[in-house]
Image 1 (cartoon, rainbow, N blue to C red):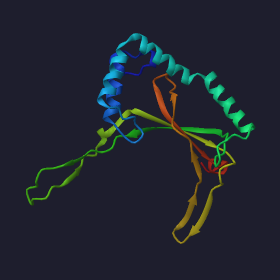
Image 2: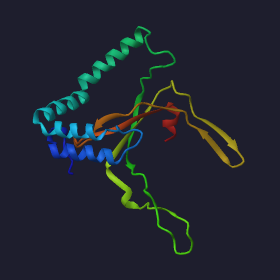
Image 3: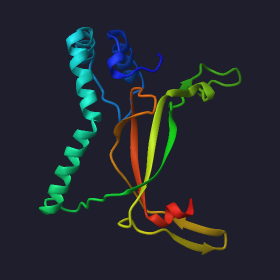
Image 4: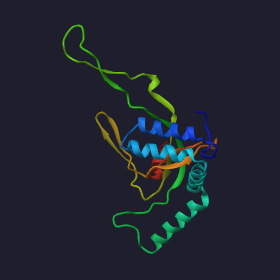
Amino acid sequence: MSKKTAADLTADDFKHLLQESQKNKSSETANFTSEETKRFATAFEDPEFRKLFTSYMDELQDPANRQETETYITQLESENKVPEGKELIRPKSSFVVKTYKLKQPEITKNKKTNNNNNNSTTNNNNNNDIDKNEKVFINVVHSDKISPPKKTPSSEGISWQLPYSVGPVHMEVDKSGALNVPAFDVCFHPEVISLC
């Protein structure tokens, strides 16, 4: 499928994306029952539903909504209503790493081998396992609220400890305006960034 914005997606595109998401299940993927999958597929056939869904996705990406969320977080912070054991960090941007999610290599069981009666396991890992459509952004940010790096000399060289904090996955639009891309904010101490 060529790159499209949410507004450009057809019912068939939505069905394809839903089917693909169910093929590539992981602990981070929503697991739908066959009934839920049918209901989604039916809903995506309705142009009004697609319009509402697109509007919802656009709303999630709207900077005004992000600003509203920031205002709410600031209010929680000023009223000391941050959940116990949590600390809000307002990091500064450093750089973005664009990478791709690799598919899990498929492990297959071969039939009996010629030399013995044992089943053997083969790892069918090749370059075709890379799905270039599964782009991921890693936003590298920094804050002095994160512990600084430590280096420890040893007989084998120097060992580094680089403390970090990872925020929850969120969706971002890439520079072409294509579909949402999963992104993670990884926060280091500013000294780590100076080492890059």
